[in-house]
Image 1: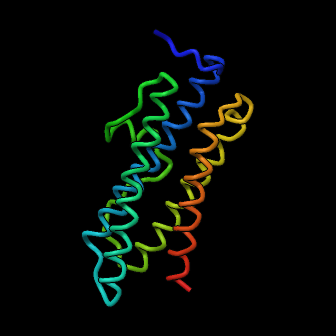
Image 2 (image 1 turned 90 degrees about the vertical axis):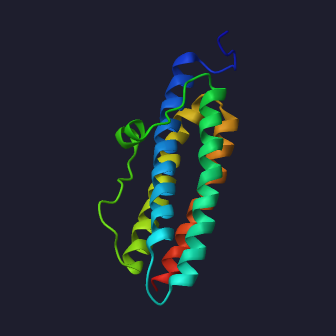
Length: 155
């Protein structure tokens, strides 16, 4: 049974496709943050280890919300490394940087997720998809605040 949500099919699919990129970015940032949690070293170890844990736990919950929104739009959500790597704007690391570089890369990742979310608003607003707009707004607030906190460590 097809979803009858009051959103045109082409808009619904376009929104879900955009959310799939958003999901891939979020999941890639989750993996990067989790890797950094495991591998951070140096004088800020305890602070960063705990901060990264808080961040990856939050991201873990977020990916579920995003995927469930895609499903609510009656589109299958991507869920494999290969799908995410094709969709994501954030690229996975092939190295393990020092703590300062970890922070820089996480700032970049947080800001990329914000830009991905922001890019969806024209179609979301035009389709009057308030639930997706609400999800994007909430996620942007979290990512902007997290980026600010990470940037503050670099000051």
